[in-house]
Image 1 (cartoon, rainbow over the protein chains, first blue to last red):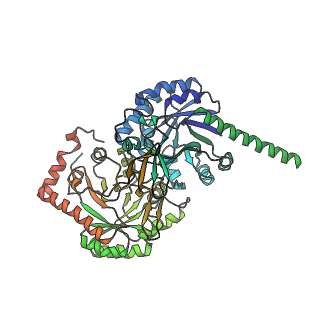
Image 2 (image 1 turned 135 degrees about the horizontal axis):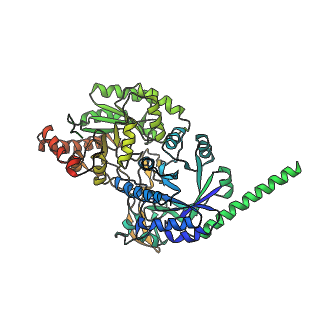
Image 3 (image 1 turned 45 degrees about the vertical axis):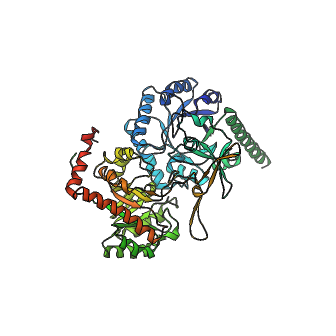
Amino acid sequence: MQWIAGAANSSLLIVTGLLQIPEVSTLIVGDPFCYRRVSQFGRLAIPPVCRKIKQHGKQVGIMTSVYATDSQLREDMNLLTYLQAEQLIDLVVIHDIGTLVECRARKIEAAILWDRYGFGRDFRLNEKALEVLKELGVTLVEIQHRAHCVLCQESGLESCCTVLGPDIATFGRVCYTEYLAKSVCQGRDCLERNPQVVLRSEETNNCFIPDGYRLLRSDAMIQPSPETITAINPDTALAWVYQPEQLRAAIFAHKSLTQQSVAADETLLGEE
Amino acid sequence: MSLPSKPPTIEIIAPLGTTCQLEAVYLSGAHAVYLGVKGHSSRPDEFAFSIDKAAVVVQQTKTFGVRAYLALNAEMREPSGQLMRTVLEQIDDLQADGLILGDLGCLALARELRLRTPIHVSSLLGVYNSATVRVLRDWGITRIVLPTTLYVHEIADITLQNPGMEFELIIQNGVCFQDSWRCGFHHRIREDGGFDVQCKHTYNLELDGAVINHGRLLWEPDIDCALLLPILLQLGVTHFKIEGRTRTSAQIIESVGRVKSALNYWQTLCNGGANFFYAHYLLHPSRLGLKEP
């Protein structure tokens, strides 16, 4: 199973740490909602980071906009076209039909991951949709269940499952950090997010934490157990982390389980 | 790029959640209704129609000269698509004025089946840019319901660069504060039949345990964008949806009435169709310096 990693808060500061993890084959940079979160220089900061990733022998993944309006799409495509020309791109994370089509039109030669933001609330996959996505150039699809994995295999697509990441309750076009603070973002204010700021429902006592354009259910990461991931058996594991140590721990846990399974199988074969 | 050769159809589309609302819709003067098909609509099945009942409604609306659009805009539940294929074929025979689809797989099936009924793309597919519109046009889609998360200038970017495509927008009642088709908040039907969503809860905003704000902080109040009608018309949005399949007949009549008043006022100002065209020409893409597709 391959490992793709990105910063849970889209910050570029974590890249150096992730580059040191040998199991990670691809690093994703960029933010699906706001490039101010990535860097004070926005998309301009991306190419140097991509060069650094390539120098370390790893592949580069670029995140595109969830709300790919005409102006955002132009910005995304300009970045992708430049990175393509500099041979600094290996994977594009897409969630919009127009972005897919534009990538094809501009001959962006990279693998394309259609991720969770490209599916509806219930995250349902179906054969016809996968057929269309494959026709439009998608090569990798984010999944949640074993059944999704099988569908992808039957459709000739690779499957990718999030094994570690923030517990996102919802998101929208309004930045919760700005809106709830009733102030205009001075640049990456959400990265200074205070985990002590919470929204608590009077009816249910459920809490949500504002994190830029997302609301998180808690500060804890969602992390399906290694057994669950093994059962799903995706081609690729996707991890969004705040610290490289979180990813190291997840990889270690998965490897331990894999080794245990192999040992158990060998024992069984020996007995037979 | 040439100007449209005939006045665009301006349409007010009322919601229909139960057959009891039919009379209200006719009285309101709406030009069209939209109704969900049980098991395939984004609203609960309590507010949707079986195919047989939908057939009855479609025939009744024809009698009254009102158009009927059938919503099958939920995500396809069955991965193989076999059930949806059968449903689409049955629905096509009803000869409704349009099918509203929101799932990529459903759209692909509709293309494959070469349905006679015009296909409209739901706001739940998420059309945010002109590139997507061009793909959908190639697929034979005749109308796009724009997401309510677009700002007016973003609507202009799409509509002015894609003349010939019909555009629709929710102009009255409920819209989502969060993302309308990917929000992860729980939605459930209460025992009294109402719709319970987490965004409607009252929230305390706490900082280090102290409450610094309080209220329905994650909820968008009902919108009333009737006054935006003239702007939207000039941008090429000509079909206006009133949200509310779960609403009462009285609410539907009032909502339609507000939009009709705004439309009548605008048409009076424009002295009818001729001046409407003049207003449209003033915003022709070439005048705005936009590149023709």
